[in-house]
Length: 320
Image (cartoon, rainbow, N blue to C red; front, side):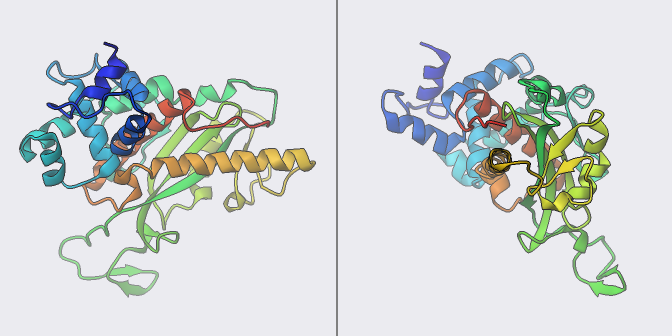
């Protein structure tokens, strides 16, 4: 029996749930875990050397199910027929496994002390999968190698520092901190910067998280990614990046109709990948866990999305 079929028939620990012989089974599998069995196999082979010896494939499925559904522990533990304590133990043993070397190898940056968390077993995967140098794959000598955009995620309102009833912001007394305000969701949120290779559709850069109200897309771009560009290299971006004619090409900067269509396809693919992150309910719904773990969870979802792209499951080619 192949490992892919084994992932099909694991009943989250005990009973057979998927036979793998019906077309609906694959759809149901993806609806519950967020990825296909093939991606599960890739995750397992990439991570098994870093796992604790007691971790089994079913524990990986438990974590994927938590990421996809973001249900409460009583519901998830009932589904897998274990206690809440057991589910919590293995879920957070799979996700936050420590690896201090990832920050030296991965093409991403986490700049705020409140968000810094050392790499997890999922974070080890971007060392192999998400690299800034991957933007050269399929290079045709174009000025722009990547498209870049920010994506926002809702969070619970961060607490006001102990001992304070109000926050003074620009001379106004407020009961919340405006630096977290996201205009898209009209509430608190964090923002990540994501860059996608125009030729292959691979994720080549992730950067964040940043408070939405304090860090607009242009500020995040100038903070780190602008210094990663080669001489005369530019990026495809939307109108929020205006004012940087030598670094970013706007949607209206096209030479002919074919170029306009290619730029539109690149932006559409970027938005598709941003939407794919939010199909994992741990990011798509309001995040209520400890805020310092948000970056770790986002990277776990980014790895799953990137592996899906490499399997050709959710992307398309563009003639750029």
